Length: 290
Image: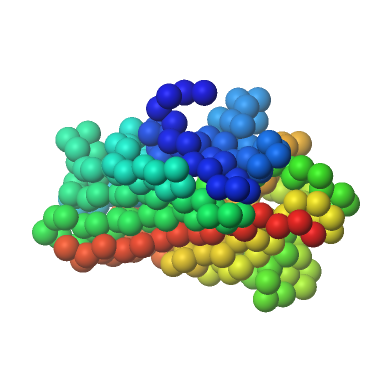
């Protein structure tokens, strides 16, 4: 195990968080069952990246903000940036990314992005605080992108996502180029439930603008994961066909719409953060047994 990982543990869970991207590398039960995807390059090298200052793809991978136009790949640069471990204990850690000459070249704002992880019993809490330390309004999108095992350990029967309120949110179709169509269409959930099958994701990720809410991922029997979200109104679910994982992605902001320009401020559901202000985002996962 890399000595750079911050290792956190409770009586129910253990996790490891790397400085690269402040990304969780593993999440295990006390009995050693892996809950987080392992980053196998055969499917996807990510595990639980943090998305900033954009979520999803921009038209032609070009963004504009603060008078600067620059290339920016899908989901922004935070996931490929080295964070500094600012604080750590046996059950909590805090990593921080500060604006630098490299970030200002493509995103001309003085920001800080602090990512926290904590375990308490069977609950994992992940948070982020973004501060605008500059003199101008700062536009951005933000999101989390954790990937959990499919099937989950000891799961018996079909695995599904179940929205706690039973609602079936509308979605925006995702094109093959990573852009979203503007129109909202009926989503695939029935009474708030979606079976996790190859057919459900044959056309790529499912994006539900404004569709985030408490949900459960699991089968009728075995380990299940119950999610709650803070200030993350958008939701995506993604599982490449045949992949042994499911991404449950809470966002504030989405990919650009077909026909959009490069301005980050005009991307769907972007945050516009005033100078000197801080905004917080977060999610919790409670590991349960059905």
